[in-house]
Image 1: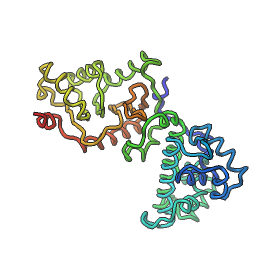
Image 2: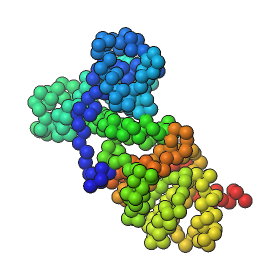
Image 3: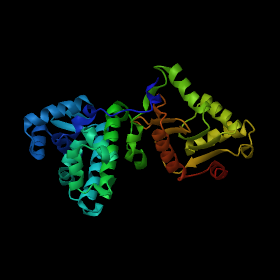
Image 4: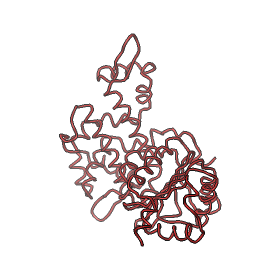
Length: 361
């Protein structure tokens, strides 16, 4: 069984524990502002020097920070992790303290306000208690009552608005941290700044995905697997800035078979693809009513294929070229839904290729 065929991936508390201690959170908050020397970090976080050094060492070993001359800074993966952790903390702070987003205090104070809550991310008993209060440990249940996270009617517990927000925080934040930790090398080696916020916000939905390497490391397994995803698709939605003959042929096979296919491509790809696959081959688009091409009006910084049963997601290299070698592939409902949300984002900002081609003449 391949990693991306797993239906469930339980989060190891130890996997995210290094990021959720009070000292680690304070360090991440401080490094969001930019590189800092160790001594300065100890001062602005209120931690002892002997407390910050082992945490920085752990974060460096995990690829979250890098040590440069005179200090530490966040890596790309570190920036992504810190951004997501602090975004989750902000939303929880708003709910717990009844503060609208426009009146939030500075981030250090927001983080301080939910430090204990962040620490609970490593305690599975809390997530289980919010998912099923009836089976909660009595001590946790008493805490939930005192904090107005649950209400009780005729002996039946239900989560309050605060309780639902807290469960969302525990679930989403823990999955997000675990996903970034698991794929930190993938995120670190690719450009993530141009990825739509809608995808980054719920990146934890990819926790059950697996990294597939195409060429040249294991081209036979990887490429065959991608073609299998296409050939087994009942429907297929995609976003791309490149095309290969083998992939185009496999997609056309599904189109001829009547599969519903929608692709969003870049303007640079649209003209050539229309000429090669439609004009030169004498294909009449009207003969394929379930096959639709769209041209994006916004920059495409991802590669996406999502079907009724699978997701394949790729990113650009730091220099802006698309990486055709590495993809995150998932076969869970969560991964497919995540891919569909991202596809709709691009489709909503695209025009039918017929309209685009007409403007070229």
